[in-house]
Image 1: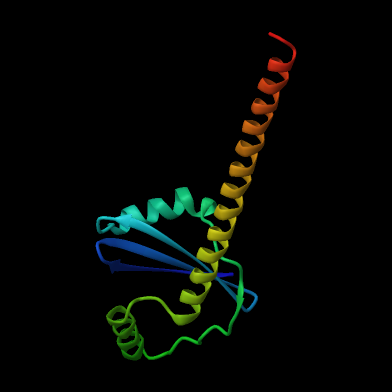
Image 2 (image 1 turned 180 degrees about the vertical axis):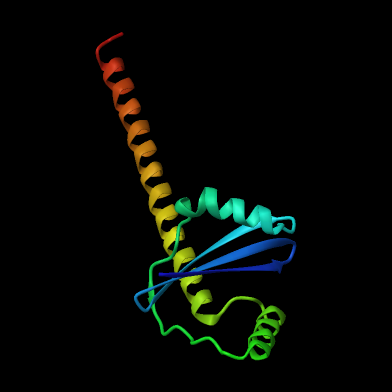
Length: 135
């Protein structure tokens, strides 16, 4: 399993994108740091919170091979920093994760609304029965 963290500035906060490659599959997790994190803060965050991160469902992908030439690596890193900082596969995985969380949230709120509606109905029925008993 390989993991990669990309820290980038996304108006108005600094964000981090964890990419995890496992057996040809990519899963991602985006976190917001707020102010610009130092290396020590990032390292402490990884040590403390990595196990609690919610990664997206794995997406099948081929991992790109690293260039051997250090100058080429530096150029590629510079190009990645100039762009938005997120690869298209990562963006797709994040979007899927957002959609799943939205579906979960709507189902949860619907369930709560139905429960509350049922509770109100039962209270109403109870009051009607109390009136019929002559109290």
